[in-house]
Length: 441
Image 1 (tube, rainbow, N blue to C red):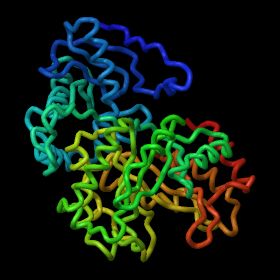
Image 2 (image 1 turned 30 degrees about the vertical axis):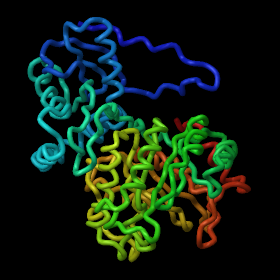
Image 3 (image 1 turned 180 degrees about the horizontal axis):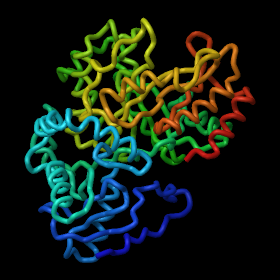
């Protein structure tokens, strides 16, 4: 039986208008079945064309289930196939499934209980495929995320009466994010708007760096939200913070205040910790800290946030591009898929020979060996002394689209070695930005 998709609610107007709806799965039909197991009301098919709902649901419940399953495409991005990524993900799944299935199941059982919705999701995919005759490669269920009876991985348990956490990760669409870092923010958001005006395109990510102990910049985040952008915060364990102390819970008071502020903000944020840890130039990085200590600190931070009920965080694990003699293999620094939402890669066009493939290509390959998580170019800019910056800006946009990368954040500030990463005043670079961004979502 086929039913119509739910009708959208009337849009709000004025300064509180809803942003343009994100492109969701290419749903063309909704099919009912009586074979869904208990706790599952709807599934999204891997081909991105079908939502399968439980037979016998009344009209209101059916529409609610469909809305929830569409929303769940962002809650469990690792379990969902978007049309734009389907070919890549299917190819990768065929190659990896034999070797990774056993380890994946063991990993899940270490993180969740038998009553977890993820267990029901995996089981229901097989039930639907076998019982209903519907092709479902990877599916996601429209069911609520339960509160933790005890905190995951040692994180504090949710207090009685705490609302159930809700996953609110940012959507995963290739070539859909264009962000900027400006030296003067926060607290001022003005330069971000000025950059957007200069390039003639909306900015939807606003990056700032936060030393350990600094509070969440709620005013900046709210200004970004009003401008249609999400804040990206790179929290760095600046001196005299100890990563071993973070892992041991010595700084949980600070984490509690930050997590509570993010929770009070209530909208999507992107948070990274100890960016470019695979490089040698930061005190929390290679040659200064054991990778296992960094991983333990990262896992503690994520677990602590989740234990406070803050699931509106997209966790950005940010590495530097492979640089001979200055970076180490990234695998030892990776906290694991359960603790990472996106992978960030920082890299720059520093000379005339720089292209997307030779700047970012080797590192993207390394990332794909250890994870299939979405990739964001989290810092980049161009200032080659002998080549037109405009050409490399065009190459950046093309590389993002060709390699199905989420997008990039332009570092619009002077470099520490005198580089002129800023595009203001460079008309050819501005023109290239404007031209390349026209077809950008």
